[in-house]
Image (cartoon, rainbow, N blue to C red; front, side, top):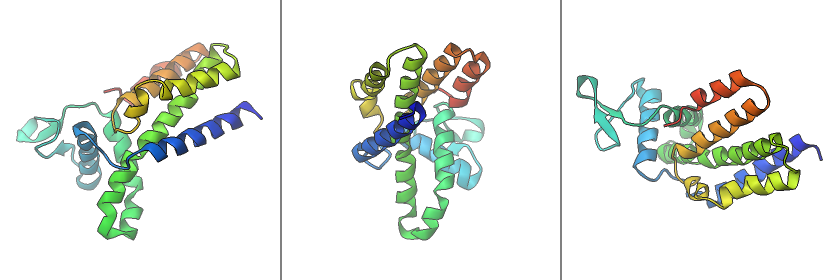
Length: 185
């Protein structure tokens, strides 16, 4: 089996397992705040959130999230893509859209497994050792519980793993640009 095909299967298998473990909701104040910023940006074309979120008072007395922009951007993309689902089931549209945004985190974590495998292979590790390292990165650390929450750490770790891999494969411009795109909080 080619290594690229194996990486696709690794991503699909990890995504499936992590989706089974996921609670399907956004829990915690940070996740709710990221979601509210995304919802406000997509629906109202504004970046402020209402009171009661992890926010601070800004221009004009409006409340703005204290977090970085990476997770609200991710939430905004998934929220915007989920609009047709909300039209199909308008009575449950909000719940479905919230669940879809929350369920994006298992995919981020599965991509991190693939990135760690790729990084280990860049360091000339054997395939079996790279696979154990990649799976152990999630299953053997606090990253597994973080994959159930909508927090910035898995996305930041993914950005760092890909950036380090790009640096090792002599692509310094990509290595420098990737963390900017992932927007660590």
